[in-house]
Length: 118
Image (cartoon, helix red, strand yellow):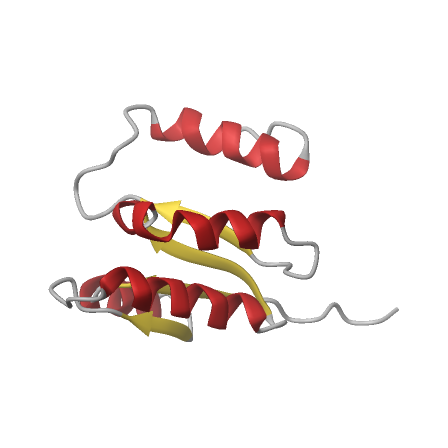
């Protein structure tokens, strides 16, 4: 029996967000300062960079940054060459989604084709 290949989790986020997930063992991080002028371009570059890395299976990104990179996210999600799953995470203590559990349940069903109860 062969050992499964290691799949990494990566994050694109602020200093606080990347520091927090590093404590949980995530090694691949792209830190972007919130007050940078060209934040959308940096998010797009980081998304393409991480999605090109074949060892990355999951990319986490704050939901407030997805609007400026919607075209890149659509390309990654629809591309057959890219295998990474992009997950939008709530930003800080607020979230755009009122029912976060329902959102992720629907998102999971869309990705894998069936429901997973958490």
